Length: 327
Ligand code: UDP
Image 1: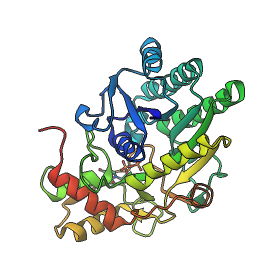
Image 2: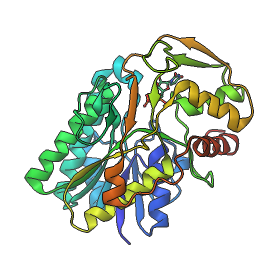
Image 3: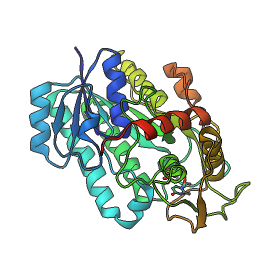
């Protein structure tokens, strides 16, 4: 069976990707340092523990499994944290990705699917972002991902390492069967924090900034269901398997939800109040990030069927109530 090296396969998006890869007949080999992921989330193929900064360990794993392609999810991924420790983001994300590209090329693996982000576009208020939008990140997270896109272009030019880049908007929801789900340590993402506030796992949600130039003053994001998102990755893999050229795709829905709208939707789905207060802005936050995804739909045949706000909250809530990696 075709083997796919899934870096970050123990994390939120990576674990969902492994589930879908296995369902589609691939063998996902997880490479993860378990720093922010969960060993219990690796259920669909073998786990190789290791760090992307350890080139020798990477070479060992490539030699052992001889993967046909890479899905590279492993990264530090918090906007706020990236403004506090930018050097860590550059070292871990950028040097890690350069190591991975070198190891792949030396092992003869020439297909690379990369998790990039809408944070590479920065703050372009009022614009629906497409793949031609200018990439000018306003935080170290987005800058580090932008740099990796450049590394991939160089490795394509020099060695024919073909890439599909997915620029994610905000990923939410979870596996319908709640075998895997979203669970970060510490949790910083809006929807799981709202659910924590709803069921008393935390006192309240703090809204980061209510003075943005949006209708209700809070930031607007475009949310996409994690299962829809990882299905796009399988389509990206098939794209490269057909021998097509490197390509970047936005993954979002074209609809924006403010922080208050997400809270209201969660209140409705769970039928419970959301305790909250209002705090200052978080450094590095863009006002509004909304995607046009027609390229993924038109060229890959992507069908984001589950990416409605009630559905994403329902699936997140199911996992929240039933599943957990940490007892
Ligand atoms: N947010 C918030 N309070 C929180 C966490 C997030 O108001 O406790 C806001 C955040 O400022 C952003 C949106 O919710 O506007 C989504 O944030 P998240 O961290 O989930 O994803 P990001 O957009 O940073 O990738």
